Length: 248
Image (cartoon, rainbow, N blue to C red):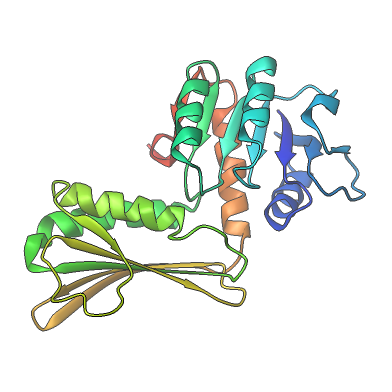
């Protein structure tokens, strides 16, 4: 399987490249990045320059130039793994359109642990009901641009599914906001230092608190998930896939 890494010179791209360097089933044939550096494989600044045969693209860079990478994937009939967050509504619609033509694997978090957490918070929300207030706290490094994180939004969706979509998301609180309403789902973002990614879902009841949390200690956990997703996606028909498909 031939892999193209978009953002190959960044931290995530480097981790993915290193993981695939000794892989017997897949190999990196090239990368595309706005900043070039010397690597054993070609690195291009423009998708129009890519000459290599590509089976799967792993895109772990940014939502910028989404249209360009999707047009390339559609033209080459190759799959694409999207591990980026911060997409606009227009971006999400474009991804849905692309999934009618090519296999698209999209997730806000490629960690197996986080995807297990999704299931756990959904079950907890359903079991505990409206007797417990739910708050989500996410922490990331000081370079992260979007807030709340895509993973926090993903967890909020799971909580809401457990509560029959009765909750409304409230992003931070400031000033005289009044007493907390029962149907609030609090969302809070922390940015600082080099925090890789931490997520907590608090179920706060009468005299007790249940916390379900996940902490990523390095970016390699996401890189490993991206590699696993790319291998799984290879050869799949057109469609939109996520971690629930991979894990079933």
